[in-house]
Length: 201
Image (tube, rainbow, N blue to C red; front, side, top):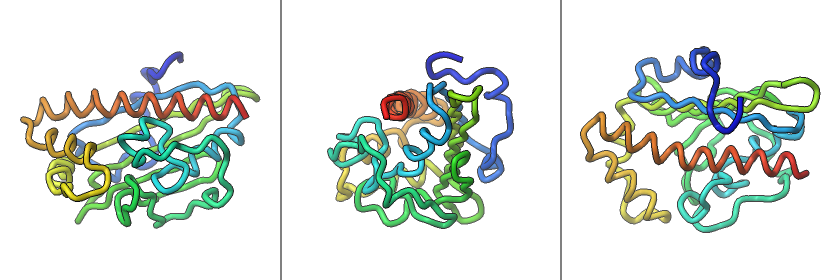
């Protein structure tokens, strides 16, 4: 359980939120062990989002160039089902909280007409008394392609939308491969960012 690789059990497990995207085009599961108790990790997960604590990844891509938070922001600690968590600065839709169990679970979705287009699960599990295993799973449906194609050239974070539109034009298997690589780069950086912050405080 080192690095960002989920164990075989973590890969196979059904996680809360899986059924929100019943027929995924792609599924990515990653995990990291954080040398801090869940109570110290959760605040960083709770405040995820643009115009909030940020994504702890590459801020020039997904946070409008604004640095992600390096302190716990109390104003973003209350998370409720139905709440919008902006994927990009200024967004008023994007991710919506589908499930939350404070201290343990956050499930974000991109809602679709019948089922979610994307689900993104953050599950915190205690490892002994002083460590936490953070398991993260993203599931994307075929609807993601249409969503990516509609990303406006006038949106504030132009570069990331250009990337989305480029991916959406690729053949299915290549889109999944390239999308997985890009998502992996961003998500690994995010996991490392959460780990560093939780272990430092």
